[in-house]
Length: 262
Image 1 (cartoon, one colour):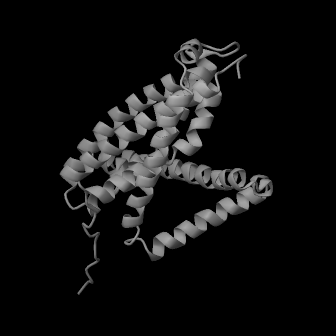
Image 2: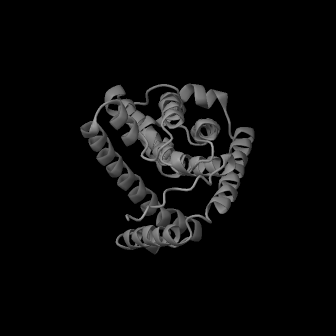
């Protein structure tokens, strides 16, 4: 008699799903904001607001899909059910490449943030930044394999801590640095800036700030009530991330207005 393979357990409630959704999506602010600002300059808040709106529309589709098809797989499962196996296969491999890019960027930014915070310039240069990035990926992989089920509680604490830090930055930034004049003057193309080469390229880069949606959708089979808790957790986390991203960009543009195309 064939041994029955044990499936996923439905153990994730709304707070755990919110923590995972917020952590997966908001973490990309730290790698995407500077990249987008380098292209969009003074129009960074507008670009991030536009990409946030597009992302909300995509999230609506994900919320409906996870409620109707509460299975693991995310977009691969949705496209396979809607079209055929070939479309699902291609979608799945495209998502794997997307995961690899986001993982590599996130890990590579770790030594640069830590080095700047602790004034350790050596770990910010090659090859040590790459070595530390690879070690970070390996360490997280081991922890996830060994203590996967025990990470949801700490994940909520980390998400709340990050939310508090972002809120403090926004409140203090708006109170001390916000300038309507500077922001208004910057809402235009800088000298040498081009709609096609810069702004249209900045919009897909802005989606880096909202990655992680696919990861959350893959948790549908582990959620206790996927039809109710997943959409609620997704939209609460996404709404906070979009709002914080635009506000942080607004504070940044006020503090460092674009001048002479830089």
